[in-house]
Image (cartoon, rainbow, N blue to C red; front, side):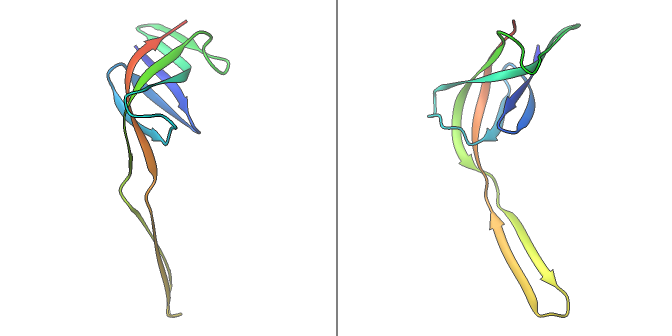
Length: 103
């Protein structure tokens, strides 16, 4: 059984037992989080929501909070003696998919 969930502005295809890193959520480590389902597949049957599947949810437990590796940004103008370096580390929440509940 697979599901497509919505978290923030991104969509993820998940299955039970899978771990993934989503944007930062206001949840403590060890707590559970519910995600809304956009689509569910179970074998040959497919349920598509408008926009969400009624009565469907994905239950996930929070494993940890952290930050991704640094993304380096460099701006450079040739022959102008100008260069600028910046970096950014995005926060994330790591979750493990416990159960997919379809309608």
